[in-house]
Image 1 (spheres, one colour):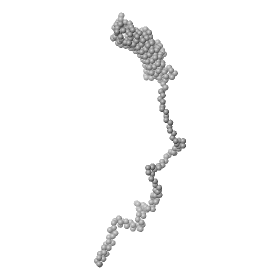
Image 2 (tube, one colour; image 1 turned 120 degrees about the vertical axis):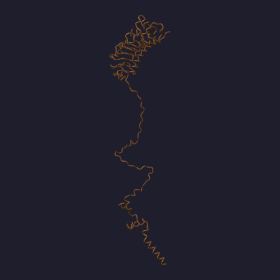
Image 3 (spheres, helix red, strand yellow; image 1 turned 180 degrees about the vertical axis):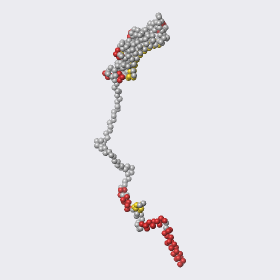
Image 4 (cartoon, helix red, strand yellow; image 1 turned 90 degrees about the vertical axis):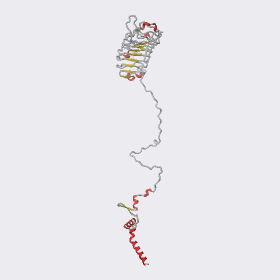
Length: 333
């Protein structure tokens, strides 16, 4: 009995001495902190760095009363207030209702007003190069309803006034144009040309007058080389006797589709091409092309003679062609 009592006493003594050391380290530290802070309630004060914060101080840090009326906006957007330096625009009650804009009517395309024919009131006094096109020394007046030859610059060398309504060429139309080399008046309504309108043009080489209404030819300048009077109403009586004799430089003579009843005579020696088709020629002289008596000349350049479309039978005049390099084109039966 004594022995058991002694053993119990020894065990109690051992446990008493080893008790604090056997406690876990964390628990021992907690007890030390409690003993250091005294009997205050645990977590009543917390040290954060060098600051001590207690639950009583949270009322100053966070005001929980502002969260009492939180609302669930769902899909709504939070209201955002934006300030601007410019004052808001005030809209009057009459402007609050948007007035629909009246649609514009379809625009109508209007043709620009162009100057009228030269000589008409609409174009009176206009410089030629405002109505026509002037490029260097060339003047282009095609298809603009001209009724007269416009006043031309002194340096004009080439004139093109085709597809107009010109009916007459007057003496003053080309006066003083000493450099004029070509006149092209194709497809107008020219029925008369003053006799001196062209004769005094020293530089004129090409005179082009097809598709007009001429019945007669005026006097022509001696330097002309190319003469085209096709598709007119030209008659043999409208060609002055020996009108072509003095035209020593004439090489191309086109008189087709007129009302001629004879071949113009005499023809210049330098002639290369003579077109007389579709006229009313029925006969010719034996010396129309050649000199059958003295044989003074041969026409080696005249290789293109057309008499087709005429009633003449070329086989009846065999001696008329011996000086030619080739026979004329026409009817031989």
